[in-house]
Image 1 (cartoon, rainbow, N blue to C red):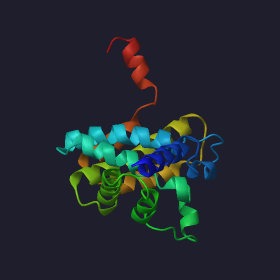
Image 2: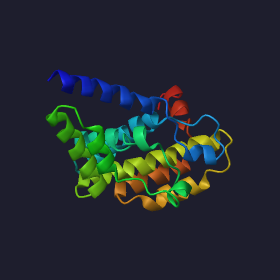
Image 3: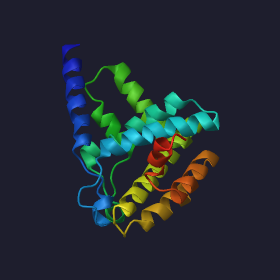
Image 4: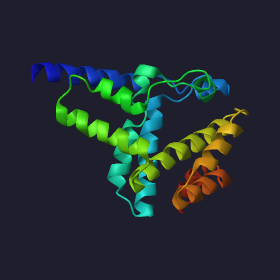
Length: 191
């Protein structure tokens, strides 16, 4: 058990890298200090729970999958889509299995099952989590656009096209038709 606890402590430090690793696609768009992978995963998990609840799925499971959907990037980094034309990284399931070596079996199974379910898109929760990933990217692109970054339309368009749930599509349309700080005005006006 001592070796497994050592492995688990190492995994927790490894996943901490996600707070430092930046989402590299935004660098291509000219964003000098883009969000971290952890920041993306946090909001994706929140969005996944919302979409899942409104789609009749388990919000906790959808959020859980979202927390682990990019953890493989500690090992393979966040390869931009243009880079994926030239590089063939291993599957996320294979990277996760490698990451889980040396941790307690129940933890390895828990994380491996979440990543596998997400990648297979076999459950409604996984579909909601995948929509959350795309919707989070769209929302982030809108925020960057409001900050003056003009090269983000491709991320908005591709994210919008990838959405599959009714709730995800409705939220995207609303996000595109409102300002990122309109909610502040509503709060200050007592709405």
